[in-house]
Image 1 (cartoon, rainbow over the protein chains, first blue to last red):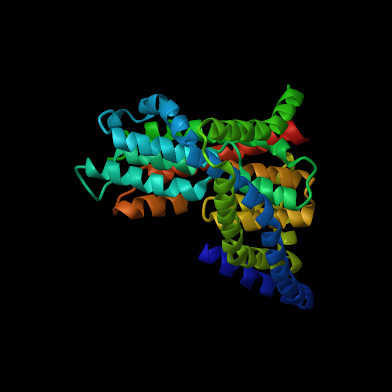
Image 2: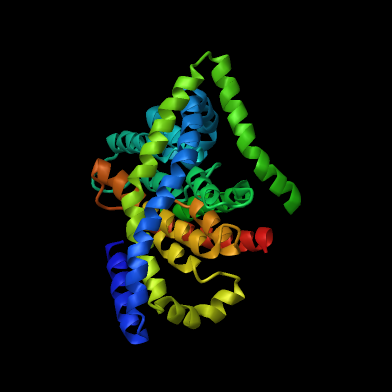
Amino acid sequence: MNYIFVFLILISFICAIINGKMDIVIDEMLKSSQKAVEIALGLIGIMGFWIGIVNIAKKSGLIEIFSKAIKKPLLLIFPDLKNNNEAISDIALNISANALGLTNAATPFGIKAMEDMQKENPNKNNATNSMCTFLAINTAGFQIVPAVVLAILTAAGMNNPTQIIIPTLIVTSIAFISAIFFVKILERHFK
Amino acid sequence: MIKILNTLSIYILPLIITVILCYALYKKSPAYEHFIEGAKEGFNISIKIIPYLIAIIVCTAMFRASGAIDILQNTLKPILDYFHIPIETTILMVTRSLSGSATLGVLSDIINQSGANSYAAKLAAVITGSSETTFYVASVYFGAVGIKKFRHALLAGILADITGLIAAVWICSIFFL
C-alpha cells in the first residue's frame, strides 16, 4: 500500500508536468480531500443502522445458533480439527460474523481460532494445514450481506442498491470454494 | 432466472432483519438497547475510515486529473473492452488484496466519478463485497500467534482472489449488461 500511495502521487506530478495540467491536479488534490470526508459522513447513517441490527443478532445468541449449524460441514474442510472442539467453534463463529458483515466482531474469533490451533501445532513457527485452510477461506471473504458496500452505494444515490446482493453472493461463493480447492491442492506441495 | 434472482436480492435484507428481530423477541433480548449499542459502533467505524478515504481519494483524483489514467486506459483498452471491464475498476483489482480501507476509498471514488448506477459502480461493488484483504488477514491472524512460515496460505488466498475477480467480471456481465 505504501508503494501504491507514493507511486500514484509521484506519477501524477510527472504526468501533470508532461501534459501541462499541474493547475488541475493541485485543484483536484485540495477538492477531493473535502470529498473524502463527505463520503464518510454519508456512511454514518446506514452503517449505524446495519451494525445496530446485527448487534441484536449477536446479543440474542442468534449468531451462536448459526455457527453451531455450520460446525459439522466445517469438519469436512478441517479434518485435522476433529479433536479440537474449541478451534472449530471459533472458526464457525468467525465465519458467521463475517457472513453478516461484522468484520470487527469476526477478527477476535479468528485470532482465538488461530491460538487454539497453535496449541496443537508441533512446530510453532510453521503454519499447519488447518491454519492455512482457515486463512485461505477467510481471505475469500464470504459474506451474505456486504453491509459497507451497500452503505456506500446508498449514500451515493444508487437505485435499489440491494440488486448487488445476489451477484456478490455468487461471486463470494465461487471465491470461497476455489479457496478450499486451491488450499487442498497446494498443501501437499508445501512442507 | 436473472429476474427471479434480482427479486430475491431485494428480499434478502428484510428477511434477515425479520429473523433477527423475531429471534430477539422470542429470547426476550432487549433489541432496542442492543441496536443503539451497535449503531454507536457503526458510527465509530465510519469515522475511523476517514483517513484512509482521504489518502486514496486524493491520490486517485490526482492520478486522474494529471492525465496518467488516460495513458493507462489507452494501453489496456483493447483487452479491457473485450471483457467489458471498465478501466476505473483496474485500480480496485490491485488494492483489494492489499488494504480493505483503501478498497473502500477506491470504490467510493469510482461511484463518485462514474455515477452510482453505472456498470463500473456495480462491478466495483461486487468486487469489493465479495473479497477480503488477503495480506491484511494473513498478517493479523498469523502475526497474532507468531507464525513465521505461511507455507501455501498466501498463494491459495491470492489464487482464490484471482478466481473471485474473474467470477465477478463474468457474473456482473450476466446480471448488469
